[in-house]
Length: 168
Image 1: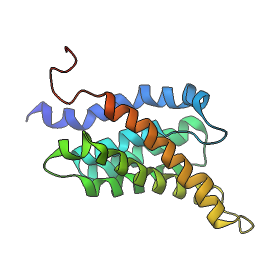
Image 2 (image 1 turned 60 degrees about the horizontal axis):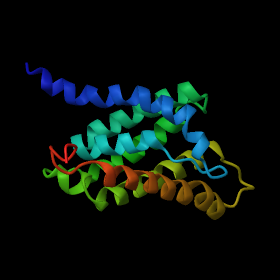
Image 3 (image 1 turned 180 degrees about the vertical axis):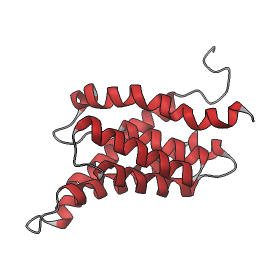
Image 4 (image 1 turned 135 degrees about the horizontal axis):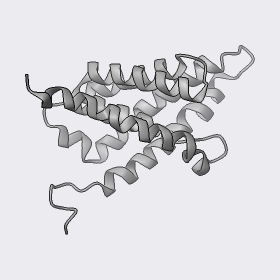
């Protein structure tokens, strides 16, 4: 068996651990009131677009479950939200990965997946009949999605497009 086959699926897991540390420790410092960008979701969407829908869904579940365990959120709330986001982002997986990963399309995929992630998480954790549904979707669905999209835009536009661009 070729070890590269399994390495491409284990590499996102290796990125998850330091990114989880950054998400929990440093990202709250750049929050705007209660709006926090989701760096782990960016990794889940990148994995789903690069490797396909099923690996993205499974990685989203695992990353969400680990995030729930580390942060003390209601168990499986982030797992469900990131599973749905990874499943949705997996629809954009094509044979030409550079079309979706290295362009503005990736930002739109992130915003869509972040909206699904944030809305699902908000509906699961803040389920109360006294809450206004539209206010909940706007405050805890759309605004974190836009902030996560902004952070991903910074990432998309700073990553070099070619192999030797770091040297120029």
